[in-house]
Length: 282
View 1 (cartoon, rainbow, N blue to C red):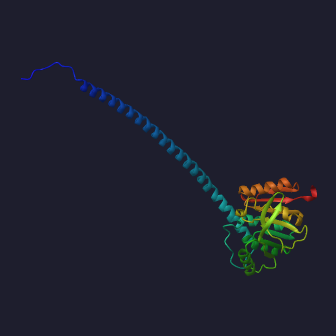
View 2 (cartoon, rainbow, N blue to C red; view 1 turned 90 degrees about the horizontal axis):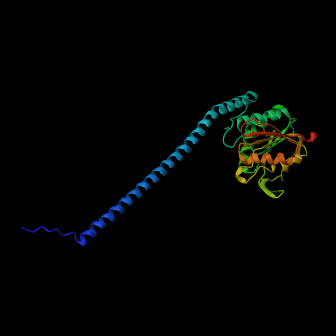
View 3 (cartoon, rainbow, N blue to C red; view 1 turned 120 degrees about the vertical axis):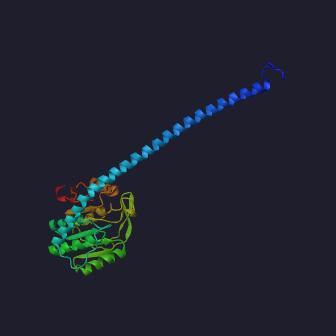
């Protein structure tokens, strides 16, 4: 029978216990740190999800408001197109009023301007569907002519062909006017070259600014007024398209700040603005 001893734990056994205690404390500390990190990550995840949900909610709200606007806008454009067909009887198939073309409400505003004005010359920056409808309006009025400036020869040819099949070549002329450098003040702009354009001073009753495209440069349409101003009649009207864009609104502001004879008239559509010259009262 083995004797039972009361010897204390050996030094080696004591070290093992202390090591275990230290290891347990380290594990506990690591556990607490991991728990804190998990909570932090969870909170960050929740914050990210919340931010994303807030963003999506804002986007859905904007889309919802836009959808509510589309219905009235479509009705407005449909009514404008119906009025155009009541006033004119096109002789051939019409191109779609879409893409870069003026909306029916813009074309109707142009027709109204033609009816209100003396209607000498109408200068249009750009060409297309609007050229055709303005030619119909000029023909119906019995005087005036549309001169359209087009920087792309392909588009110029297409608009000429459109006028021809509608029998309107006597009422509108499309000129190929490649973009050239125009120095105005301290800035240089790419705008229509006027070498082949013959205009008499103060002969233009209506100026339509629907080109060049915005991607040709910042404030690409600014030169229209300073370059053509000598040819504008004393009470000429200027219709600017795409004024829902920041760049075009800035161009309008530049024109108005530089010329005290300009008067803001009205906006016949969300992307249109009509201003007029009033030289005789300044």
